[in-house]
Length: 319
Image 1: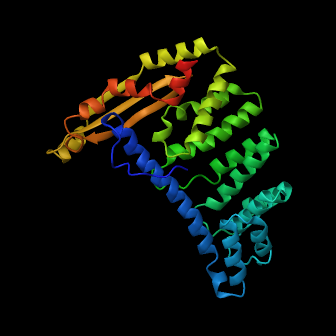
Image 2: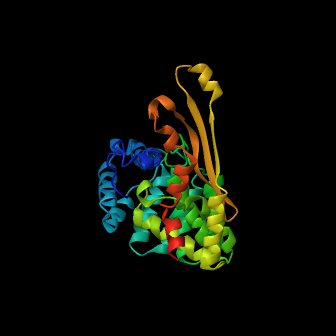
């Protein structure tokens, strides 16, 4: 993950709105990591009052130091009881086994974590994590139908706890990439393309996601397109999507009545590519906050120009 460096210092006027959105997506990504860590320590609170304190502290220390052999040694000395979030406990043990080359044992512990009924983690973060961990292993084994089963289980039974929209984009990139790989694995390339299309129109530096990983996903998406279309056909489809870009800007009447001293505009802009809607912007802005250049920054022309900076668009145009 790239470090966050002062996005309140705008790079340039034309990118202000995208940096603004990226800043909030970044914060949500790290909040989700924080919740996971908090779950570990909440679950171990009672342990701190028992003879297992040394074991749990050492297990955590070695785990976060990525010394998985040592972490596993101490995890296996801990006796789970009713005060422990067993799912998080099993998930950690599974990670240790996986990292030390014992994949089948790791899978067994992940399945135990999903099946565990006692849950101090009320947001189902640990159960969802176990599902997605199994997905990764099953994909490595080429068991794509089974991987899809656990992806859907994570989505339906253990959905992401959404405090707000922050970080949704990055989380969905990761999740839909897994879906795409699974559908490609079962020879359903159209479905793979559909799952990724809404999330591959962006600039690597504006997305709070590892840049190289994001670029690899964009390249993977393009390779999927090339299994169905020639380079010229893809370029033509993209040109048509840009030509038919949807754009709408209107005054928010309700807010104008509530805040007569300010003017709020709702802006919606999206394109349709490969049969999928790709939302570029769907929000509001306050004229007093953005100043005289707001009309230019939020104009249709501004979004058309920005599209040409997207990694996928540059890749298509280059080929």
